[in-house]
Length: 271
Length: 297
Image (cartoon, each protein chain N blue to C red):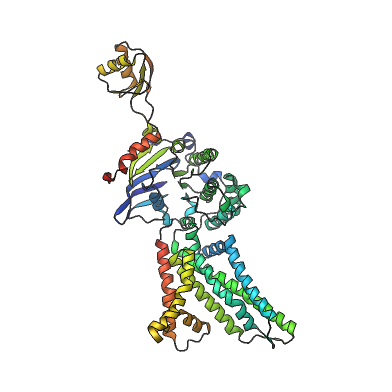
């Protein structure tokens, strides 16, 4: 059916006039840099009440652990690694949730529709989410570390036994490495599963189930897929001559889900 | 300018959209109509790069959607106003997009003002009504000062005042040279807003043209003092006609022809005019009814 164009009088009056002439002069169009995407993803994790509550809860947990530690001091100099351990145990347990939610929340809340119409190159956006989750966890861990430092100082000052920072480098390196690995693994699970609750459940249960079932089924060979063992060795920065086992575990539990997750989320139908 | 050429989408063995082609020119509003499941949303999603087509192309201002460096600056899209994070405030929702589009924060305030959400900007979207979410979605679509608007069911959930407001906004946008395509199931609203129609049924385009042409009635409506006598006179003159329930006749002939035939028989006319269009609703069912039959596929 071919038809003559019917235009409204107003349209005929200003055919050559560009629309922008009547609106604010906006800056010229630029592409979206990766840094900008990361910045926006960081903002998204903190600009909702649930996002802020999650971070606040993690820090509150660290504070509670430190206060308990301060009120139950052992004799002797206040040891930083003791305080860091107390503060970061809970933090490292919950931080992966930040990673999962970075990948799943847009699908659960359906904001993926807006996100991927504004940024059609999905893999870039998903990678920005990985980076944002790592940055956010590092920041939370850093705040936790500062709290542990403050607690150490307070303990040293109030008890007069002085302070010791023995092993601070190793403790911190271990904490940051483990956190980064856990968060990336969690984000990968989130990218594959895309449902917050299910992804969190699988993230916490699957490796534990394997660490229980694996040795029974495969005896010593289970170490090839024991991701907790691998994380432990990486955190201690001593692979105990188990480099191939460590790499295999990381490949299976982190690299593989990351690749599958990026592939799946770039093809997933946005509802 | 939107160009859709031979777009086809198959899911397994079923074909959601088959060989769809149409263009939407600058300065016009095109209504995209079809029953549920006819392929409207699938077409709009292929147009916006969310769903890869099985074959065919869709371009906006000559480029594939995914090739636009910053799509929101060229095309404003609102596919589902309900798909917004309930925990974010209206203002924050727009500021996130503004940051991605590279437009200043002042633009966010302008758009909030333009859609009448300034006073609700601090509230979380979870507390918004559907009509308010539509307004927020439209503000988001307009944020990058695009040349093209793609809106899926924008009037859904709006009150009559909101619908009138949106009609004015879209007509103003098109009047300034913008290109608009909108889908809607509110046929009366579509009839009052759009210049052109693309009707899709069973995944295929069943009509594509200007509203006037598609709705133009055929034939002449005539009413005589003596309906039976007039009927006989016109039939005798060889004109084909159809009696209407109120005593008028719809004749497949021009007014002059009908008038002459009546005069020759001495029939007195009390009404003679071009027949009304069937109306969008009737047209809609007429065009899409057959495509719903399973046998038609």
